[in-house]
Image (cartoon, rainbow, N blue to C red; front, side, top):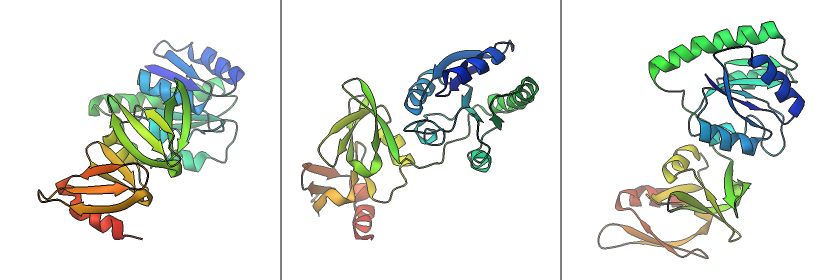
Length: 241
């Protein structure tokens, strides 16, 4: 079973790592010291299980969940007990308090193994249903957290997606347009075609062409084509308050 440890405290990661090494079916494939690293490592390694701290700088343990391309089994591991209800609302398998006692960890892993067997039979992990509020992007090979409220549009850019800020800043994310369209719950965003998701605030005008497709203009970001199949929904979306 492939496992990733996420905790901003090196001592806590080290202690849990030592405890897990006693179990032959556990392979620790990566560790992360913050939420941004966690997203990269989890999406790169596709682990079966993540031991996830909650209180971390910038992105906490709950914040990272919408960015995961596939949801692994999650065990929250924290020094605080007040997040237990929210953890189980997020379909966590278990909630461990640090420092984790050996017998409690053993009990947790028995539960994990039972769930893992079910997942293998189903062939998939439970889908992530939380909406995105922050996007993990790259700029000059540095990972940054960009708030959705600061994004003007998303546009397919080769194998990446370009996130363009309202202030003109440009960032790259490896989240696809299709994934973003599914995960963004903010009604101010609309997917106008296969390659572009746009914020209502920047739309200045649009017209329907003879072909039935549309064309819209923005104040600062140029013009975009609107898929014919999206014209009716787009018109309704513009009129929504």
